Length: 263
Length: 286
Image (cartoon, rainbow over all chains, first blue to last red):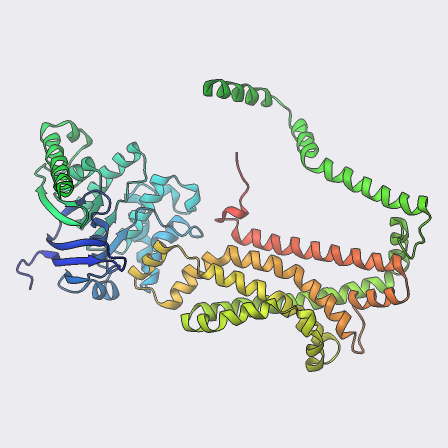
């Protein structure tokens, strides 16, 4: 099926209808290639989270096919560590220290080797939490908790990182630092990242490609290739090209919602 | 309007600040302990005065000094009775804690089991144990075994209902996280559900520990002593028949102190277990 050898995720004519009758996603087609940073941008109710959850096997398509690394999502999560998920809340276990939280995925996979612990510490160092290994989650700020959550996702060395509005609950300053750090991690680890957001600036700043979606029913309305060179620094935000891309993305969002309202 | 209230708050903080450490202790004492102490002293004085003024006989309402006197003179009876009741209720409590938690985990690990058995657990909970106590005496014989069983039965259901509630109140996202890492049912139980349920379990144990003393005393009322030495419940029965009212009061107060002590002990254990992470065990900082 996979014509492109670098293809890691494919949605083929995927629809999702909830039992309540709500159409979360309708005839969704998209292929994602290895190493991409792709954002799903859209208003709430456009099915962007649903699409992400399908890739993780947490939600099943009503019709159509979702394939991840040439297999079904269920097979992938049962047999491999290839997928990691970062939720909007940091979702840490409050009775475990930062280090033990990061070690959780490895523990659940039944591996508690010493080398893993060293790698977990390395990952925590990468997200800037080296001094908080033995702190408990309640002692951390919201931004730090999210860093732990990202470290936990990276600890199992996934090939793909799924992020569901991870920075939505953070303040703007924390969000910007985390965005820069996330891009650095992405370039260093060469993972594929699928990132759900409703923030246009965030989508343009982070992504190599943006899938703009419209709501009710959730549909893919356009794809934007963001040709801004990496590594990107925060200053990029004042560039003319950056603001042009923001315009394009914003218009694309607007058009899709206008189209919806016109019926 | 709002700026004004901020300003007044500020001045208040400033005026509080230079207070000495000694002053702080006094303020805390005044705010927290002084009221209850005065209330207790007033209560005891009234209790001491009223029977004396109205000429109420000690076997109707003994004065605090009568109670104290009875406790001291009959200490050789009271102390062994307390010990026996303590042992009975501790065994009853430990049984209800271990069996209660174990059964809850078993029920929670299978939806089918839980759906089919939990309703009965609730119905059983509503049966007043006192009502079935004589049956237990028939089954287990008068004395120690029956008393411990009654104590266990009374403390058992709060543990079950709390633990089950805790095991089923796991955060949905956390559950999904465990699913994503393909955690087995038992790993999910050990590493997620049981730790999440800890605050609930501890709340259940706190209820259960005081109930286990009630159970032991009720058990002694019904099951007697079966040839052995009697506990507080038995002492109470005997004292009531002999109209030794001051001693009866001493027994009652001893039972109350026992309950308070047991509760504080279990609360301490709960605090130690939860203090590193759960809000209920943390001091509120303002």
